[in-house]
Image (tube, rainbow, N blue to C red; front, side, top):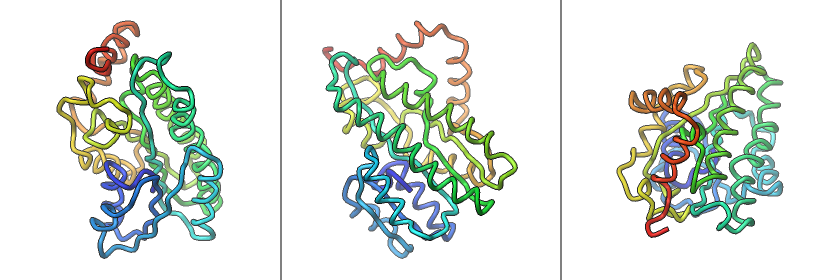
Length: 247
């Protein structure tokens, strides 16, 4: 379980614990809150930077010879401001966490699942992956990658006993907004879904072997609208939501 110190990742961990799974939680922040809320469950933790090959290798080494029944690749990072105003080191780290590290981990764990003929993979994509992400350009592009990759991998693994599900949440109340420096945007300061809403939807869809899920009717409707509006119009929608106040 990656990105499990808070937010959607922590809520997924609670659901896994309730279903009797032993947990290995990976994150780059302290685990005090997670351990308190998962009291009584079988939990191990590892603090790693999953934007690096070394971080992924450390997590895989911690897994060692244990059989992984469920992989929840939830770790992600956002980045506010216009792309040309961002520090490229931050952009590189975003791509490292959201794309490269996720691919590395899924390939290594997925191979062992395929060899056993059993396993479930839940990837946290986003409805943002359907929007040209003005003022979150690299983030939205990375989530478009995750959304697309999940269906490709799902197809490759059909009839192997391994399923792939993509959770595509809408705006959710997590520390994403603070870490991305986006609290002063319209979306960052507005109403959001509690993290348990997408977590429950994603966990249920994964258990059912479904390909993708968005938490509610409004999200399904929004997905349909996104697919028909011109891309320039969608980029302007995202700009209005994600441009920082005064920018």
